[in-house]
Image (cartoon, rainbow over all chains, first blue to last red; front, side, top):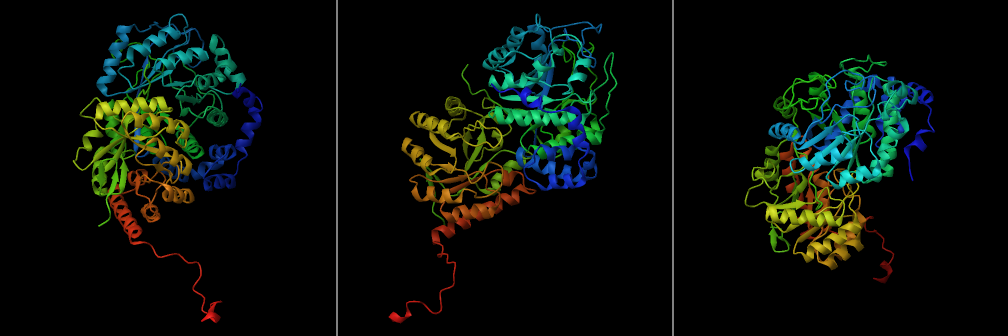
Length: 371
Length: 256
């Protein structure tokens, strides 16, 4: 049985980081001249040496994205089902030790939130929970998916890592994709930020995409939380993970997200800063490295940044997201997991996308399985 | 006037088939597809809400000369493809289906085994089956045997705009086929389309090259003209190609 850990353990963080910073303008030029980029080319594109080439990277990224995905962008909405959590994560508003009111949505509350999002036009939904196995375990998730699947053609979850059999069960019930971010691929730093709870098990989390691939999921979303460690090294390991998964689970689609640390109650200051220019560089580097991976942009980023990044490689985007359970219609005043930055309405975002020459795609999936 | 193309019970004046993906708006899509004069237009079932009369894509394809060709993009197995085709027949009222089974989401390359299985089943269920496949001459004959009404071999991976990378195999397919051969995928320029027609392809299907061009309407017209020119040249019979000039002192002149 294949596991990413076997490959991952052959890499050393410090050595990898140094090899990225050692890249030269010649390495960058070589990478820009190639059609098929390898991981060394990716390192060159995320290195400081690539900064003067940012415009060239952006041009190429836009061109490749349009060729593959056309003049379109997919809309999705996150829906938080629960903020109960048994983990301590230093950067998260839902961390167990934070004294906030906890809530898990009932069926009626879920349907109320759904009605709000359907009214806005959404057809792809992302369900989010903390990790509280007794209240929001696999049975809760299965029930939620069954409850809403007639109303959404595409359902994704971002929840605690599950067992392969549990994923299989959810897939049978209509689950399309799972997002599971490693947060950081730096083993020791990971331990510092996740001192308690099931999430403190680095290896189990690292193995999650393998279990998803084996369970036959349609799409897996990867990413690192930028701010915990050096974004360049974390991005390299994300790319390594992506390449391994694409070769191993070749029927599965992949997406990458780019969360940067945002303020929240009891917040953590980023250890390593990632500037807007860095994030543009990274998004373009991922597109040049991989023409077909989906690149996703949340409301964590600012209006002005989102207005421009939608034409540089991004393929899916959310709008007016709420990061608290019931945040749309049930309990709009409750505390959020983190503050979003771009608070514009769905209608405003749709208009912005159209002004950018992009056709807004609401529906791009159909369950062609008789269940 | 070029010969008409017949597939199943339908005759087509235009040998340019088109698709609906990747346009920057449905309005632009409609204008470009009208400019192409295409009479067979494929639409991904996963992208449309077949239950909804007001669906943005479908409502822009209502002209009487347009025949909808639903495609099964997104399915990974024969079973899913059959399910999708039945759904589309019921909802869209057409028994035509472009059979696309590509379990590989990266290059969207068709699975020949599942495609053959699904084609056989769909023919039995009364569908006009147009299978998207590799430029594999044996597979084309096998599909013909199970009763598909045409074959749609690829010129290059979908959306790659690379042209007729599979030319040698396309030529064998065209030579051997008893059903129309439609070159699908990879055609990135009007010259590619014209060339496919000159080789004897019965039609071509073009989407990305039109939708992603800076001016989709002008590009649609360019493809229309190229396909007409290529077909006209094919029907007029191209002069044979010779690599050398005719020798001025032929070796056999002593026989005269």
